[in-house]
Image 1: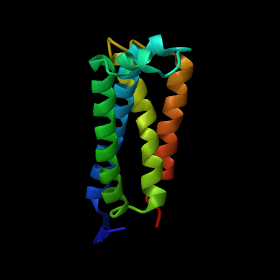
Image 2 (image 1 turned 180 degrees about the horizontal axis):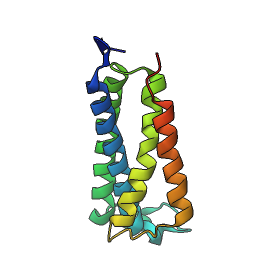
Image 3 (image 1 turned 180 degrees about the vertical axis):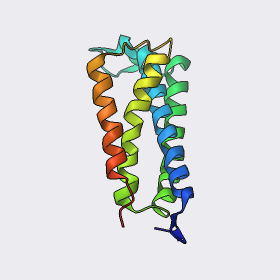
Length: 136
């Protein structure tokens, strides 16, 4: 871990945050793109189903998601150069509440929040705070 005096290098946390936001956005785009694939239920991947895969409503969000995943990997590799794995890895769990929030707030996805889910996500955030705490 790169330390400046007694302070942990904040750059590692910023890089982790970028990676988390990118992977969360990728998940939301993947879901959005897959919503147009409902016609592929129980259909064999053949030439007749190929037109569904080439539909811009499918291919554009899924391609964008793939690009965001790649960018997230680069950001994550840089993160690992600045933070110990035991601090950085739990931070990835913050993508769960972020994806849930995005899915609830998105008019297209319109997922419904619940008390049970909110409690679970709050526990994840609490767990990340405990696991990522810098102990000397």
